[in-house]
Image (cartoon, rainbow, N blue to C red; front, top):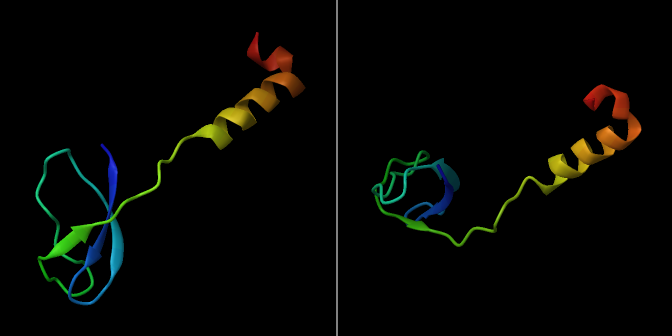
Length: 65
């Protein structure tokens, strides 16, 4: 499930929410108001963990045989 970023129109609180695609807009966890807007979020990857796994395989190749 994707992580969406929202901002409350009332108090300005920013928060992240894990939601299914097409699910309704969540209420603000700070003030409880139901009108929030979805923010444009940056794309996140697991590139750092993939890099570290590759380095571990180079340092300890006998561990991955």
